[in-house]
Each structure stands twice: as C-alpha cells, then as structure tokens.
Amino acid sequence: MSILGVTMESWYLLFCKSKQELRAQTNLQNQGFEVFFPEHKIERIVKGRRSIRTSPLFPSYLFIKLDSQNCNFSAVKNTRGVSGFVAYGHKFQIVPEQLIAQLKSMSDMSEVTSSLPKAGDVVYLNTESFKNVQAIYQESDGDMRSILLVNLLNKQVTVSVDNKEISL
Image (cartoon, rainbow, N blue to C red; front, top):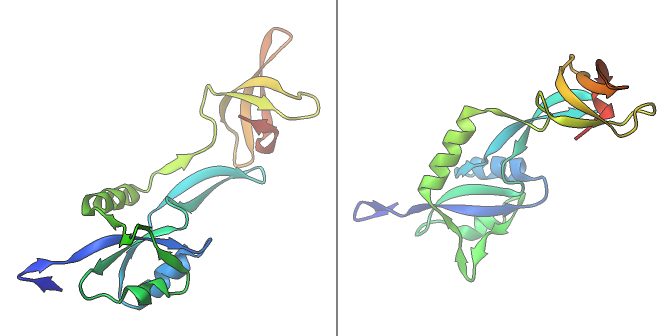
C-alpha cells in the first residue's frame, strides 16, 4: 500500500521455532507474504563420506516483507513455525533493503563452502597405528578416502586413509 505514492513496505526479521524455518516460510508464503530464507551449501564429511548439503545462513531466522500500515502483525506472529518478531523495545526490527539485496545476490551464486582440509593443510591421523601423527593433506581419494603425506622414519610417505580417521 502507499501514501501519496510512497510505499510503506519494509523487511522485518522473524525468529522461528527450532528447525522450523521452512515450515514457517511455507505457511507465510501460503498467506501471500514475501519471505526470504537465505541458505548456503556446505561440504562436510559425514560418516566418512564427503557430502554437500544446504544449511541456513541464519538458523532460526527468516526475513519477511510487510506493509507497516496495513498488515496484521499478529497473524504473522501466530503462524505455525514462527516464534515472533525480533524487536528492540517495542519496535520490530526493520532490515535495510540493501542488506536483503546483498544476501539474495550472495545466495544466487550458490558457491559451496567447504569445511574439509585443502591441499597443504596440516591434519592428524586418528588410527590405532598412527594415533595423533601429523600429516599433510594432499587430495581426496574418492568420496570416502583422502591422500596424506606422512613423515615416517625421516621419509615422506604418501598414504590413503579413510576420511573418518582424519582430524584438523
């Protein structure tokens, strides 16, 4: 809505119930609200296997665009999955439009953030034979193994080990 051609819509920050961001997003979109839930892709080792999964950029938070003059804020607050608005005092937190635009452009790039070691990183082996032995990460060897450079008896040896036997 607008007053004299000036729109009164702003982005607000919502706090969601634990792990219910997608539920809140779906329910709010079904009510006709514009909602933004930024996510990013993370590469991790899960059960010894490399995997890429999508995670929230801000867990338990999402952004909603509302008309401050003509919106039923209590309907938003009472939506399934939503705990309430983030507020300072009695005023709901307004998020600048530039920040939302920046977050949207970052999420469009969809680069994968890796929590895995990179070539040349120092890692430690957690096997029974090589407990806490320092090694240098070389490269991945498929989904479940990695190639490391280990210094044994003053000689550098390349070994392939399970990913679950490596710690940073």
